[in-house]
Length: 337
Image (cartoon, rainbow, N blue to C red; front, side, top):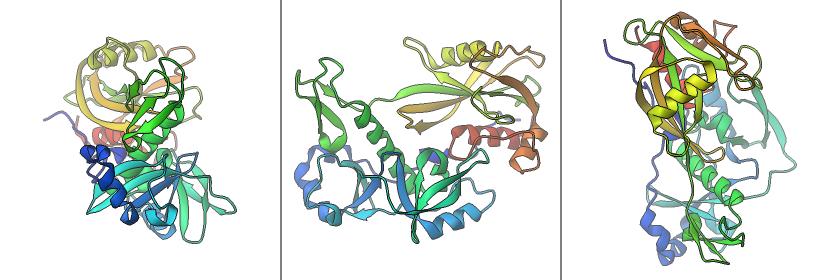
């Protein structure tokens, strides 16, 4: 029997677009193709329009690991004669250039309920043709191209919003390379988008190869019955494996071993990348939840997790499909011990 692996690509790791890094320094080419480009518009809450009929069709599909709803892009020429200063180039797909442009929040729209993950329904702005969705709760509804576009768009939007001033001298910065760098107007320092690494680890017991039980925890701000795997940021000078061991020890008081890499997913809220691991611990390891960080930690059997995925366990709410935690838990539940 082999150790379990991820059975699907995490929702926000899906992408088809060629980022075309060399084009960011070719303004003539990008400006010349602007009129035929498509633009992903994103409001201050990170929401973008998606076809309403596609959202309904995807939302009605049960058991789908990823959706097929496309983002409703706008024709660039209808928005501006040339790339605006705050537009960011996302890449090329199927002969078309794609950009991101921040816009004001939609107004005078109705609302519609959409599944936001964790069994929560969200009220989102909607017209007759479109629903404005946000990436964190609804990324899994999108098709592969749209998921990649919106993930990159949200990462750049968050970076620019938080990095309006130079970290060295405090002077305002201006955008360069069509959204992929900034240049300080004071000390001329150049900066590029940042990503913070974080580990997320599925801990199982030492029964067989893949364990018979999984360790899940609940944060104090979460409602009862909502659990997920453990996660934390990598500290300066720390290896990924060292971070796995430290975070599990700090959060639930358990020593783990045999940490192994499973996969990754960007998580631009505001600028993380989640690095998925699995690790083992003793079957009877005592749990000591960290005060103020972990409200409760519990062992769950594979049958309990499978029942939760099937909607047949009212005592366990699992992560929504946008999170890599969903894929990790689903893959473990589908494996044999």
